[in-house]
Image (tube, rainbow over all chains, first blue to last red):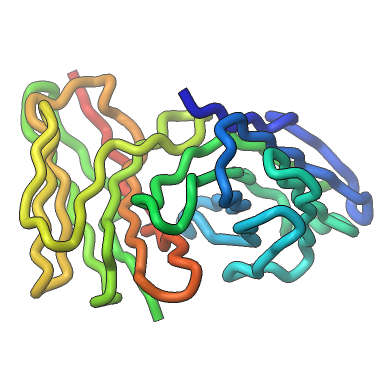
Amino acid sequence: DVKVTQSSRYLVKRTGEKVFLECVQDMDHENMFWYRQDPGLGLRLIYFSYDVKMKEKGDIPEGYSVSREKKERFSLILESASTNQTSMYLCASSLDLASTGELFFGEGSRLTVL
Amino acid sequence: GEDVEQSLFLSVREGDSSVINCTYTDSSSTYLYWYKQEPGAGLQLLTYIFSNMDMKQDQRLTVLLNKKDKHLSLRIADTQTGDSAIYFCAERAESGYSTLTFGKGTMLLVSP
């Protein structure tokens, strides 16, 4: 089975702190994604990556950056956390663009910014 | 732009059928998906349908696609309390990087 692992299930940070959310997948998938999930807003795409060292902005990239130094790992970085970044963050991966596009999700990281 | 709409809440009794509806706007959609999210967990793919199909059945799940009206539905037969979850409809457009666009999710509550 494909496994997408998010290193932290729950985090509490203070405004202005730098936050790293880590995600690792074990199935050699080309594509990796970061979404945030908020009540009433569903899932919104922050950034995605289709190859090592490649990244593309999603629908809401402001306030975030990403890093993909290795194929299996995709990190989401909040340079200076703000209270409006309190959310559930979901990492996902997919095989490649030629496949069905099925996404495999991690369990999520719930971030609270005080 | 792409948009996926679905009703936010559905309540049914155990043993009844549930029907969750979804509409989308992108006519170039190639695949359409139904994902399930249980409390405190990530999303899990339930089923998907290719855009040249009208129907797909998988055990208790039936997906109907009306491409003309851009309408997708998920029917769950003999709904169980374990089916209580949030169900997300998603589409994959054949453009750019073909990322998925998700609806806001339908919370299904199954009462005994």
